[in-house]
Length: 452
Image (cartoon, rainbow, N blue to C red; front, side, top):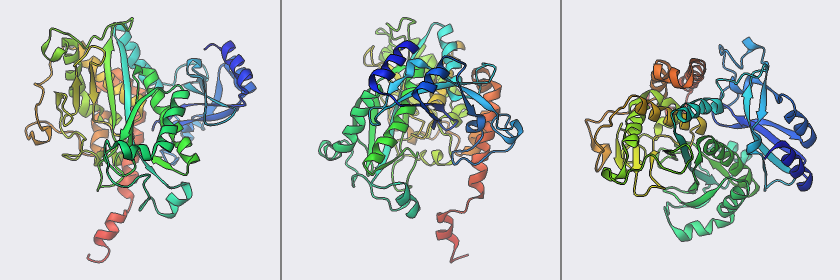
């Protein structure tokens, strides 16, 4: 839509407030609720002022010293939110509300290089310059609990009541029991222009997976952010809280955030990963993409697994990968190749958890694939059978501190994402690791309190 169409829609549908914002470094949808007329006025100008602190604090809004953006050193200056009008949409679960995704810029109009949406744009532009149109989707799992913000804190985030007890993975009748809530999320997401195409019970209490139809890479990341934020709003109306934590409990499987990806011709008519005459119908381009994605995975893991908790998923036999492997229709490998048909031919990166910032995860996947294509890399042989049992296969970095240092030292990351982003993001994740290092946990009290 252009601005004139948006203005008519606002008048016709009685829109009173527009949620204008974008992804912070953790992928959280942050911004402002603007009244309709000031929103329209701002769209005609340079955009909307926003304190740069959203790029300078951690996920609990604790300030991080020493950053070049979003810290006291910059005086917590304003940056600009510039609405991407193509993303304007009505909010079907909130009367009189609309939403729009923004890009971030300096006050002189220059793009904000550390913004996750800008990082993904940068890699997309590189792909398009090479003649490729990326098509992607983010597959998110979540756990739903019959709690609210007060009960979570009163219980210390433990002993929570799941939406539905028992494992019940793929159970049709158990999923139907939850249709009043999960079906409502599905219907409202579709009305919100986030095209859910299916969902199912997953392997855990109150655990679901909702699948969103693929789109161009930027739209796919927008969909993931809007779905995460919107599902929390919808669930709250029913007295339910979702979590997208990578690993809620060491007794349960984690929540994944699988990234599906393919490269198409510039007119988006032909899937360049598909070759009917090739083994497994996988083109040479697809194989080079796989090779690059695997080669860069240790350096880029920080973008797939950004939190201390992310690394608790990487356990053998847990549906999360532990080795730098790929295979056709193999869910034990880091990369699963799916190539039965031209329309569905793609790579599924199974490394990220549901805590992934979709913009950064998709940027890492696409950059890795381009790295392999640009250098003509060949992948190792695809694995068959259980990749967890391949003792000779290289493993993934095992902790957040290790992943931070691999990323910070990566010249490939600087080439594809820009040095400014790499330095800023590495500093933020070092902070996250240090905060965890200082924390005294319940596990430590249970283990050491009486016996030492």
